[in-house]
Image 1: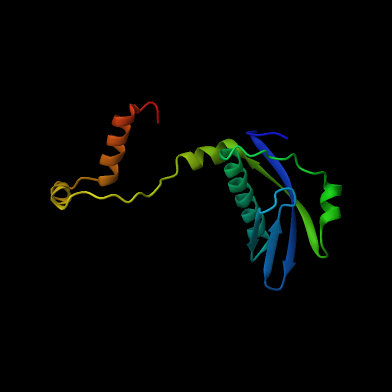
Image 2: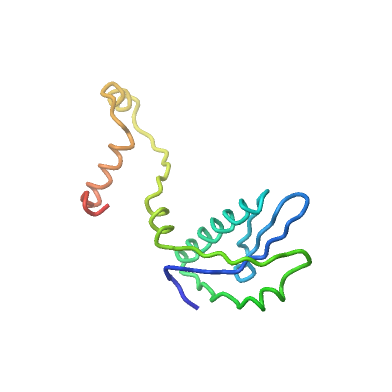
Length: 141
């Protein structure tokens, strides 16, 4: 079992039914997704795996080694097909860490009015203030 590797590769089981396509990762219970087309199913499977692995890393959970294909095939139900999905985690980690997070805050009305008169960008001011208070320079982030 490995944690914080650069590349992960897991087998999925894909079921195509009248109401859509479902995708599950037998080695990762709870990592599931759905789609309308096979192309979308593959993209959604990759996105699901990226997010699932990222959360496991953040939670310091043990990420299991993938099972061999014969074990995965033994777990499939009628109509399910196996497909492998590979994710490159450095790109995922970077995207998740630089993702913008919405925050709700409160300021006195008089301060809001003055800031709006001067066309201040509230997000920029908050970011600069947080960096200054945390001792983060432009080179840090």
